[in-house]
Image (cartoon, rainbow, N blue to C red; front, side, top):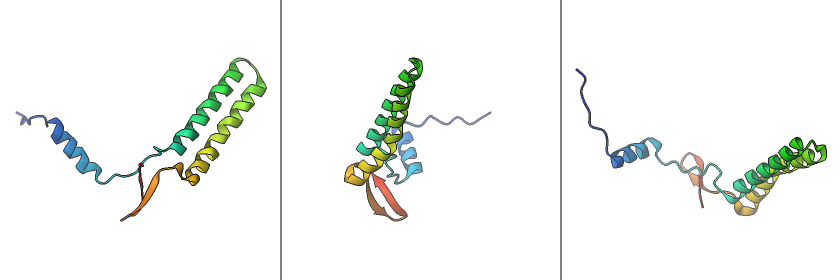
Length: 98
C-alpha cells in the first residue's frame, strides 16, 4: 500500500517554487528596447509575408530589410537607456526590470 500525502496548499506550492528559484532577478528582455526590436521584426515579417503571397519581390525585400533592422534598433535603444536596468550582484551582473 502506498502512503498518501495530502496535496500542498497553493501558498505552500508558491513558497516551494520561490525556494527553488531563489533570487532570480533576470529580466529576460522585458524592456522597451527589447519589445521595440521584436515589434519591428514582426512588422518586417508581416510585410515580407504579404510580399510573398502577392508575388511582389520588392515588397518581400522591404520586409526583409525591416526585419534585419529590428536587432540594431533594439540594441540602439538599449544603449540609449531604454533597456533593462542592471545592478551588481554577488555573482556578476543581474538584470532588474525597471
